[in-house]
Image 1 (cartoon, one colour):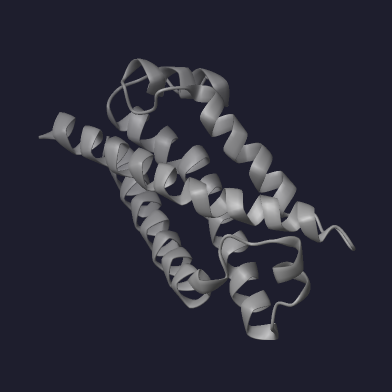
Image 2 (spheres, helix red, strand yellow):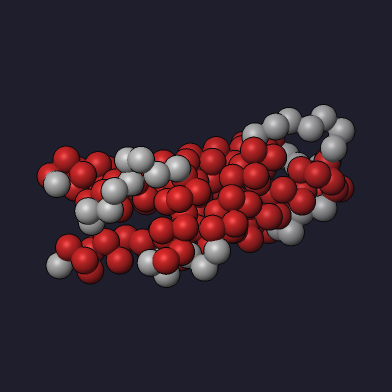
Length: 156
């Protein structure tokens, strides 16, 4: 149990760090959202750097939560997660009322994949993907809070 507690705490801290940097990058670029194709074409170097930071932190956060936080937290609670697929873990989180629908998390994974590909001369696609990222930050925060609060409440 102690090992799972250490892993859970580490994943929680890592997630919090990604949220911190994600929020900072958004604050530095909030005036450009929602993005349009034209806005993407005219981004300054600083705006591009902070947009890249948004993408990087969103990707790292989604990976950390999906691969380490959920796994270690569920294992800490005694759930047999080692043999579960990611989809099975998501369904378990649904049953625990951590998330309403596992497909929402799968859509985040699709968005992550879309954001990590470079689309030269596809500024409209970039704008839509970045706007979707901004819209999904609140969802990630909600799932993170529900899950960490749930684990903390069960551990007493």
